[in-house]
Image (cartoon, rainbow, N blue to C red; front, side):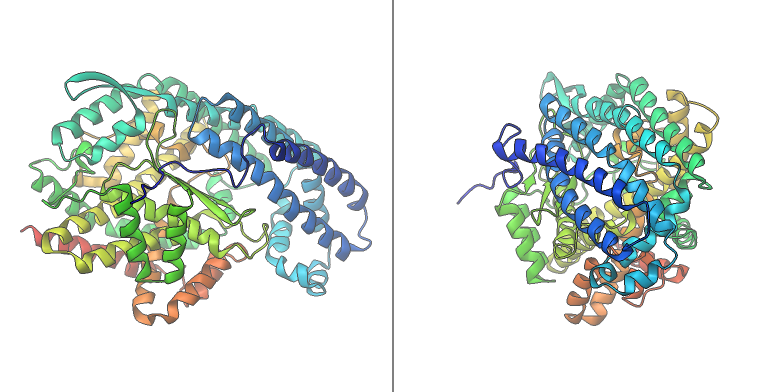
Length: 593
């Protein structure tokens, strides 16, 4: 039997940075930027032949970003598995600097579109513009938040030595941080992802030891991480104010193609559900022998006597088999991702922690990073990231400009895939296996509802205080602990929380993606709602689901949901999705009376 490779291949992008193809495309990228700048300067001064100008610009944009994202993805993916790869880092920085040169023509186009009074009429007269109508109308709507051409160019350039530099520093700190820990009878220095994965270990002493060693290790990078966070959030606040947004959250919602009414409805339903999650955590604490709620280090403790461990090959078989219960297309996609070397699953020093999926529209493929150690949670993570890849697969026939979907809808396919394998596994499981699988599912749901809510509270307070000035490490720890207490309530032991969660979560350090928390809750609950629809509609749902994913780049989230007859501005939808999880919690509690 052939052993699956646990490291990805990037050869479909480029063989190496020194390859003839990569060097040629770097030159092409530079030349095309010059051409776009020249062409825009010549054409966006009058409204003569507006139709032809818009068509030409869209064609140039789609073509250029295929080239640019191919180069950038190769650099970023190389860097993600080798943080000290100086060549990769240099290439990424060069490409980011090159892209800033497009700020001027992009601002020119956006302002030009904003001044075109008959834009809808122009769009209606062209097939290619009709296909990009949402993209164009969104540009016109957001045009009022643009600064002057000179200011936008300066901002784009300064970001590379501002928020982008801070973000790179934090990624370097976290990916190269070695944790001092005594395991297997000896003192070791282990990569942070390896130690964090010990939270899923069967050995309770190891979980506690890993948690304590992890927290201790953050002391080495806390000041630098805090400086990075202050630098990034400070820049975000400044730019939001300069552009005229009411708040950073308002900008995030606009970028997410989501409205405040939807967010409020979802958050209200989430807060209503917290007592049910608190009961789950207290039950888990009781089963593990804790009296004062669950200590943070046991939050991910595996439950049940079943050996829920998988080899990488077994994980693949488990995922593909259960995906096939939903759709042959989805199952075949997953099988292809494993067999064709699209997944880097091996934990190792220098590789970033966590997991992500990068959809490579230019080659109609994806690349998935995870840190697989054999737990059921790792299998769920793989299924989650493959779901992201499948979302990209459903967008392969769209243009590049129509393939860019907002954060909240981004989690739909991934969590839908998690739900598929968990529900299918539960059907075949014994009582003890069902308990273990159910607990793993609730553990994940708790992260996406309760912990995400704590992160939303943390980031809201962080932005509020950062308006007044930089925050110290102690203040950041205080805000995080208070957020965890508010979200987890009496479910956790308040004496054993995680004050450094702001250090190890990379999402806080994305200047272009603030509040990268509530989209996960949206994705979970929207996916649960869709899964309920699947159970009602059966096989007819599958094609509708694929079509839903295919339009996510060219509709608002409310309009995407409406294609399935769902009103996401109504609290009842969110309550119905949460009810599915609450029922699982009651089942979990009843299984261990």
